[in-house]
Amino acid sequence: RARPLNGAAQAVMATRLPVEAELAALASEPAPVEEIWAEDQAAALPLAIDMRLLATVVCLLVLGTVFIYSASMYQDYQTFGNVNYYITKQIMWLVIGSFALLVGLRFDYLHLRRYTMLLLGVTALLLIAVHIPKISYAHGGAARWIRLPGGQTLQPSEIGKLTLTIYAAHWLSSKSDEVKYSVKGLIPFGSVLAFTTLLIFKQPDLGTAAVVRGAMKGMFFVSGARFRHLFSLGALFL
Image 1 (cartoon, helix red, strand yellow):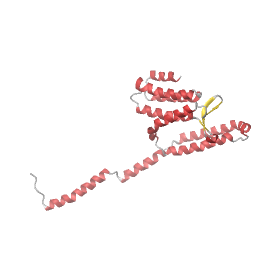
Image 2 (spheres, helix red, strand yellow):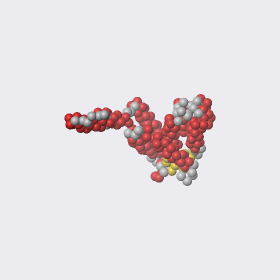
Image 3 (cartoon, rainbow, N blue to C red):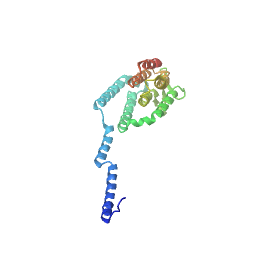
Image 4 (tube, rainbow, N blue to C red):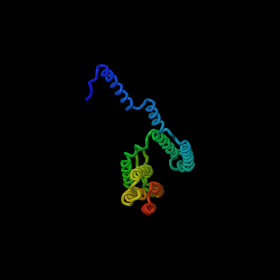
């Protein structure tokens, strides 16, 4: 049987309980130094740039721009009366791409997981729209573009390179234990990629179809697929 506390013991317990409650509250909250360090790490992570990779990209962009100007200036003058027609469009897209790069540096790519199916659906609709005569633009016997206001065009197959890579990365990472099986791995993955690649192939855009096929086969193999499934995937895309 517990003995009743006297006045002194009650006073000690009265002062002890608030102290214990305060200590518990402090323990449940992150320390200020740790919180500041976590915020600094989160802010610094998107800015971790591979300078060698960035320098390589810049060099390729500069060389590509010079080659485009050198190869197109005569045709620009003959067709449009302006030697800077194509180079102006190239520089415009370089500026847009540079802005997209800066935005991408501040964006955590893992958030793209929740938009994977949306991106894939939009890409499929754009690839289908290319085959609709009223909105597509054909040149040289190939219907690869969609008409945009202002005389601009959009090539969905170029968007497909990025969105299909995002989809494959998300699907293969979330189904890593099922990639080895035919029903759960090969058939779903191969069906989606066969459908989108067929739309690109029908434009026809054989170069983009080959690039997408090679990238998807490589990702499928690295994710742990069996060799026979890899050969089946290759035969599916041929």
